[in-house]
Amino acid sequence: MDYKKIVLYFAAGIVLLLLWNAWQRDYGTLSVKPASNLQQTQNQTPNDTTNTANNSAQTPTAAQSGTQNKDNFQPSTTPSVVATNINTKNLIHIKTDVLNVEVNPDGGSLVGATLPKYPVSLKQPNVPFPLLNYDNATYYVAEAGFTNLPGVKHSLIPFKSAEKSYQMQNGSKQLNVVLQWQSPNGIKVVRTLSFTRGKYVVKIHEQITNGSKKVWEGRYYMQTKRRNAPQASAHVLGFHTFFGIAISSPSKPYNKISFKDLDESPVNQTIKGGWLAFIQHYFLTAWVPKPAVPYYYFSQTGQNQIYTVGLMSPNLKIQPSQTVKLTNQFYVGPEIATNLNAIAPHLALTIDYGWLWIISVAIFWLMKHIFDVIGNWGWSIVLVTLIIKALFFKLSEKSYVSMAKMRMLAPKIAALKDRITDRQELSRETMALYKKEKVNPLGGCLPMLIQIPVFIALYWVLIESVELRQAPFIFWIHNLAAKDPYYILPVIMGLSMFVQQKLSPSTGDPTQQKVMMFLPVVFTVLFFNFPSGLVLYWTVNNIISITQQWWIFKRFEQGKYTSKPHKKKKNKKRKK
Image (cartoon, rainbow, N blue to C red):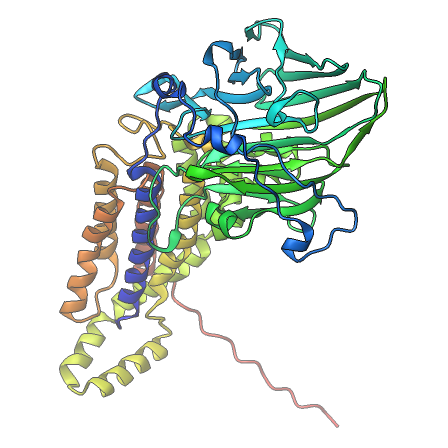
């Protein structure tokens, strides 16, 4: 046995190490403030609130960016970078079956959103995960409105509502919250926030009526403001979940842009039929405008790392006594493919499965269908592993037959070592023996090669699929997306790997054999901090492989895999 198999295992170990680093990045220092604790700091707005609100930044003009806009679509300015101080006593509270939302009447902005179906952690099952918030450290709000309204500062309309608290009643499928405002000269804006049972989409219906005697002109905008406050530091090779924004357009359905990229190259483009999203681990917010209307997409960077990314409509020109209606959507919730596909094309791409996404999508699709039947993600992983092993059975069979032949040749190779002292000659004679017996010395490595891409794809499924967040299995495994708290699964995995090594042919020198036998210890340590779902997959895969290997070795010894001689074809001479 040469060193290629050791190199293969070493490469697999490097891959596992990178995945472990990624896991540490995503979960090692993760800390989320519960919504109840946020209230202590939410009475304070970001330090740059007043300064930047009164000094709206200019968006890049076509000349500045080096491009030309034939329609002269870009506005000269965009709405304020950060909202003015929030009076918590005036907030409007809205509660549905899946969302708890806080609306600031000054601007009608969504300044708070928690997800009661998704607890912060298993230790805090009654604390909903906070997404939108006006905390100083994690400022994250969504705004919409009209520019150039008379008597309105910073484009924030001072709305009024009939109630301060709204709740979706049992049996109701929809909840509408109406906000109204009217200027002294008669311009009236009515905003209706529509919530649907079981949905994370807020439909925003705008109705603006020009009751004045002059033509009104302005633009409608939708924007999200967020502080660049990632939950953990980056790590080697950047092998981690994405944190930043994404923009979709017909020419580029999914364009990820990091905060660093926003600093270097602000967003400055016109898109028809797109969307704009802020992405973080498991959750996102997204503006989805009416696809038939071209919107101008822009970004600004304020003080203290607060970013504003939004989109503006074409110029609206409303005659006296005329009414214009607009409807757009805002998604605030988990990254669930079925939900996102129903809202906009390509929005499900925000579930980023990495470069092996096609395998990840297939694995999740299969797991989801199994889960719908049995109701347990852990058993779904087990059954998916069985299905994968069944699909590659013939390939594995050839590998194990090759390993069985290697075991059979062990005495002959030992005899060659006793007879030949020259290493080059020994290598030639060994390879000649392999060729004569039709044995591939690397055939036993094939099962490892097969499971590595599946393993990586499953890793992304586990860390990106919110359905598997805090998903229990059995006994002590309460979260398949987190490490085994008692390290029982990694130890079982290590033992199974040790058994596999004992079954494998040991034709190498003693040093190589010791290295190979030490690998299960290395892999066990690497798996200590891996998500339980991954360890479960690898353990089940090993156990099935051991069973296959034992069964094929036994059949080989019984002569079931003895190659049959090929019949020679008779050469028939043509009669002339």
